[in-house]
Picture 1: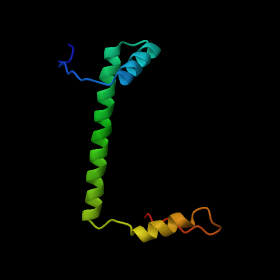
Picture 2: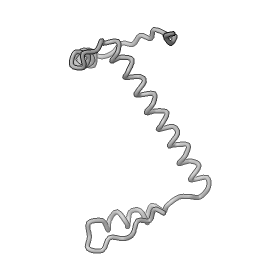
Picture 3: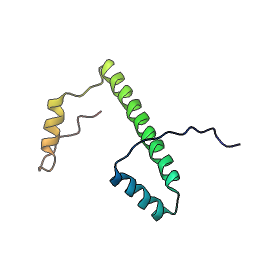
Length: 89
């Protein structure tokens, strides 16, 4: 049984529409197929970004942070004869 769908419409710049059509032709897929892939990929990316943000905030709440100056000193030492050890534990 096919999944239920809902039609969404959006106005996109002509340049983007042309790129979608070019990509669809190159992939030998329909324009509709390409248009389904784009929001699915974007939603996945945003969900991952949200998950990582919540994880980072939890680290801050528990005090698992690294001092900015320690990171800067480490980064500045990279490429020198004596790089500092990574401050990341």
